[in-house]
Amino acid sequence: MTALSAHSSANDAPVALIVDDEAACSTEIAEFLTRHRIPSRGVSSVAEAREALAKWNSIRVLISDIRMPGMSGFDFAADVSATYASNHTLHLLFMTGEATIDSAVKALRLGASDFLTKPLRPRDVVQRVEQLLSAPAVAAPAPAEAPSKTDEGLAAQARWLMQERRYRLARERVMGARFSDEPGWNMLMELMHARLSGQQVPVSALCAASGVPQTSALRRLSDLMADGYVVKERDPKDARRIWVALTDRAIEMVSKIVSQVSIVH
Image 1 (cartoon, rainbow, N blue to C red):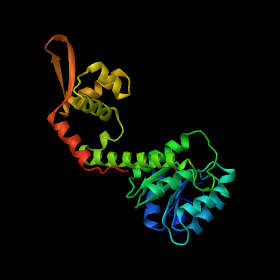
Image 2 (image 1 turned 180 degrees about the vertical axis):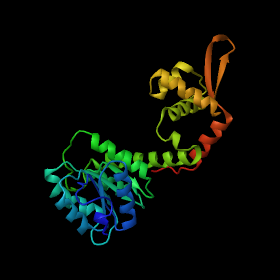
Image 3 (image 1 turned 60 degrees about the vertical axis):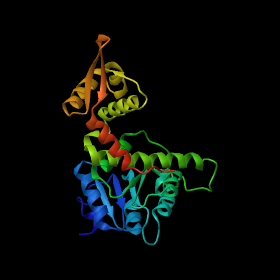
Image 4 (image 1 turned 120 degrees about the vertical axis):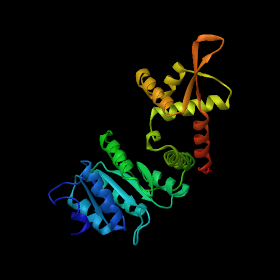
């Protein structure tokens, strides 16, 4: 059975197409997406990808590796934008095991919706594809043009994107996946900032910093206390006022996360 037909029956119209010269990688991603109700196909060459795009006009997300034999993912994406994507809404995601600022800038200039670094985490791919499919339709990406004054802004975006990913991965290594994207992390960062600046944080301000409604924030605060990350301290000068602070354990974990991340310049 070929990669093109390994994930579901030939009658299923794929929504996502994954192209990677490592067939095991494209197969794994396609199968995971399909299990999460996003019909997908995985192929291992640009030729197979062209065949799939010609066969199905249902494809809305193209996930392409950058380094491939014969034609790079960048060249393939530029070519696709001038053919298939001209009449369809097609979101583009690049993936690579060797992320650099230059490659991230080039991906953004091609109109990529995201830049994924290997090893990929399937659940992150599912989440990103779901977000793209639910987003309003946008114009197809245009082929790459000559460098312009916007490159500086794109480089800044690329640096931020790569740095954010590094911090996220470091957070999960130290604290677990629950702190990937959720209000608890916002609270910890607010408390860390307050500690470094010599300020105190009341419960109300911490809930506001969480980014979620107060009732949800209070529940998350209770979880953080139960997990030993934060403590409440009553103001000795005003018994009605309660401050929230990080525990030594939380301070140590945040410091460990920072030490694992190299700053991108």
